[in-house]
Amino acid sequence: MAEYTYTYPSVLESEDKFLDDLARIVAAEDLDEHLANGFLLTVSEAFTNALVHGNGLDPGKLVTVVVRGTEDGIAADVTDEGRAGIDSIRHRRPAGRLADHGRGIKLMEYYAGRLDFSETPSGGLKVSLAFDRKRERIGQ
Amino acid sequence: MDISVEQFGHVAVVRLQGRLDLASGTELKQQVKGLFSQDHTTLHLNLSGVEFINSSGLGALVSTMKETRLRKGRLTLSNLASYVQEIFEITQLSHIFEIFPTEEEALNSYRTPVAD
Image 1 (cartoon, chains in turn brown, blue):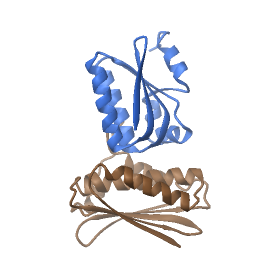
Image 2 (tube, rainbow over the protein chains, first blue to last red):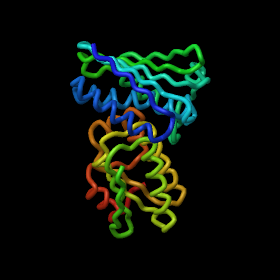
Image 3 (cartoon, helix red, strand yellow):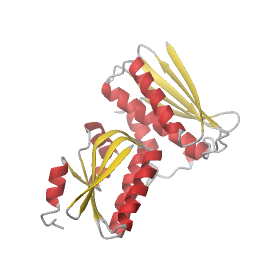
Image 4 (cartoon, helix red, strand yellow):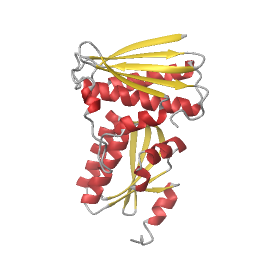
């Protein structure tokens, strides 16, 4: 099993670096195209939520991304250092048709084989996503 | 993300290259704001170079569409990669945007009246 751990300060510039890192993992793990696209998209949704909503773009707070690749699949945990924790998920409202925001969780639910939310002891949110290599479309 | 703009008649064609995410979505909105300030309210976005899009990028496109509508303009999209098209379908945005297979077909649509 390969494990990759990255931490990023909560600034907009981290987004590109995170996507570069994730793209390297996707290449190293030899994911097929559909799985790679779904993985990149959903982990990026969790990352952006952590950066903006969890940590409020506070450069002093970190987003930690841990990815584990196995023969059977790939999994990622994205953790913020915010205080909203699980309530930020419980109290979310579905995006309106013309809303600028709010589609990220729907996309995570569609693509991920497993999606879990948990709270860290300090009140941060941890999003855990898992994908099975064998299923052609794992969100179905 | 690289954003280039070319004028075809009264249509401003905006071509996007790279990732459309939170940071580049903000960049796109700024670019479009500049076009609006020059009274360009008829926009076509060619997404052929978009190699990645997430919900923040989708939000930037929705915002652009709403701003265009507010100005009584028109916004079309073209050249969506298959996985981008899939994301539009999952989020039901494919029903909201005018999407054409190619830029040429989109530009042709500006030459013929659109039925209500």
